Amino acid sequence: MVELLDVKDYAQQIAEAIATVVKIDIEIADHNLIRIAGTGKYHKGVGQSMDRQGYVYQEVLRTGHQFIIETPGQHPLCAPCKARGNCSESYEVVSPINVDGKAVGAIGLICFTEAQAKLVEENQHSYLIFLTKMAETIALKLKEQEFLAGLVSSNHYLNSIIDCLDEGLLTADLTGNILHFNQSAQRLFSANLLTPGSNLSSLFTAQIVTDILKVGKNADEVVEREVHIETKKNRVQMVLRALPIDGEDGIKGIAVILRPFDEISQIVTRLSQQNAGYTIQDILGTSEAMCEIRERAKVIAGGKSTVLIRGESGTGKEMLARAIHNLSPRHQGMFMAINCTAIPEALLESELFGYEEGAFTGARKGGKIGKIELANKGTLFLDEIGDMPLFLQAKILRVLQERQVERIGGITPTAVDVRVIAATHRNLEEMLAKGEFREDLYYRINVIPMLIKPLRERKEDLTTLCEHFIQVYNQQLNKNVQFLSDGFRQRLRDYSWPGNVRELQNILEYAMSLTEDSTLTEDHLSPRLKQSEKSEDLDGFNLENIERETILRCLRTSEDSVRGKERAAKALGIGMATLYRKLARYNIQ
Image 1 (cartoon, rainbow, N blue to C red):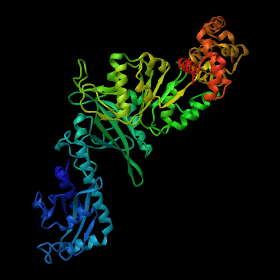
Image 2 (cartoon, rainbow, N blue to C red; image 1 turned 120 degrees about the vertical axis):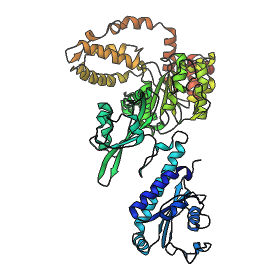
Image 3 (cartoon, one colour; image 1 turned 90 degrees about the vertical axis):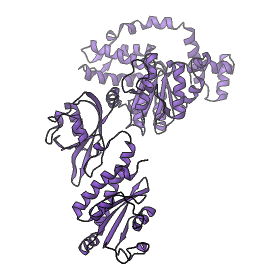
Image 4 (tube, rainbow, N blue to C red; image 1 turned 30 degrees about the vertical axis):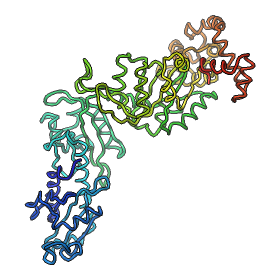
């Protein structure tokens, strides 16, 4: 636990700064009544105990509130003091130094002349506010020291009465001209790059400078970017955070904080997050199934429960996941997408959980932060979770249960606050029966199931989707397509769409690339769609497709209840257990 004694040098700077401005002596004590800073006659007593004279300080530490002594030596609190009745002080104002609601010290303003006492008394409110702010400054320094304990040294202290951090800190005006910088920032850059009056453009790329200057236009804007800096010794990676400095007349400048960070992929995730702008309105379709999807997404977005999105490839599972994230309170956090199929099994664990330095041969120096940690306060999207190896399923289960993650080679778990959205096109129930998917993980991720139906079961959405993609490709391909011929529309309706919406998108892009007219006709269709009639005839003999469609048609004619399923099973000539088994097999909900 860091105490005031650990920041005595900083406290002495504060005391001397205040005394220089107000021409009144300052005294600062910790919770043990040890004087850690002082000016004037108190300077020689720094490091000594005040237990025989600091009775006012004892009261302030006990109550946690400010205290004013207008008659030192005569006040009831001064009764135990040996100098009672013969006190050299004329006026005293003492304010607590509070950290997390607890007084850890006190700062006092001591008057020794009648002129000083009269000045303070006449401007008592202003001095109280001023002393409170100085106490808050010391408290902030104490919190910072607690956070950075063991990582900073005394030569990182800033010598001003602003928040004191050991990270590189510089300020600039609204045009990017550098006004001030601390010693840490000076050590990062060579002397000819970082000088008062130089510009941010001499330190960072044009795009980074543009992003930094954005915060000067909006008081609520905060920019975080990862940058590569060529220091005097080597090339290091830093996290740059830029935020506005408010003044009485609005934003008066920009503060830039640089913190070391060894994760290269951070900048990639930040940029990809900015492109994750899907909303619920981007989930297109007028069918009942898609309307239900949108309504359910709006309801569940505000919660924390795990979501399992199921559907065939190309139905838009990731788009739905991103829309839920952007609608949720976590939208300011990261949307971290992991494709469990695209990443090799040998690398998937390190990508998810990260690793410590030296965890295995070839591990990056300094280690690597995992995607789960990067998603803290955000959303972790596990795409194709059905393809995740069994040994990783156990570790993911622990993350969901314990809300902690442990890097490879690490010994200390890190708490994470992530919402998990999983997706798969596979039949998890069938995988459970075969032992290919953990049952405990299945129930953990299947808290809120969502099913996106394939396009062939909601062909009423074709018109809406076509209109959208035509508008997109008109702009991208510089076309002016406005209509679809009847034959073109009929081909789309007759096709089975094994690739779903993604395939429809590709077909429309192909067709629009070939036309110079305002109408798409059958001549513009891709070869596979022109031959679809023959393929459709062959597909019609697939027994599983026939069985699945027969079950669907039967269920549509029955009510959505146990009695309705009993009637459907009877009509199909099978038992209830067989019906439920086939519903799971064909992913029918």
